[in-house]
Image 1 (cartoon, rainbow, N blue to C red):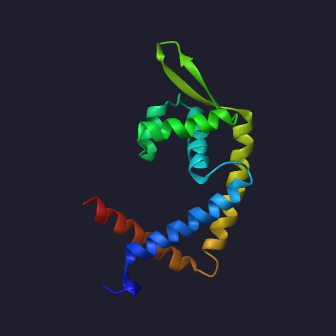
Image 2: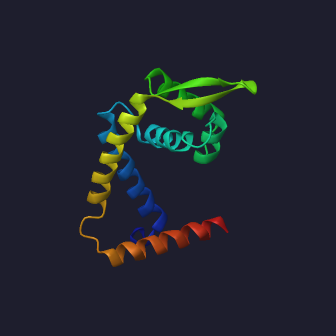
Length: 143
């Protein structure tokens, strides 16, 4: 296989560029891309149900130690705090702060700008084809 048609390599390069751009933008807010995604998840899901560390581990495919490290940084930076659950003192619910909501809104603005840059010059039809192909590739790897 030549480098021109190495789909995995091309996807990896694009993913790396996207993460690099996102982290550069979000560093101005004092947060990383992964932290922003986790924070957004907490903000959205906390409105309906309590969120626990195990939820973060499962949704994002993180090890316990990685999730612990990320959550400790978010807590240190005043973006979340943990509350004991009355039914089980061992469990701690993750609660976002007001600061988290403000940062999440700024993160969303950054993501929208990056998404616009990402699809600049790409037609709606090409975008539809892209999603169709990438979904099929993902299914191929699941099988």
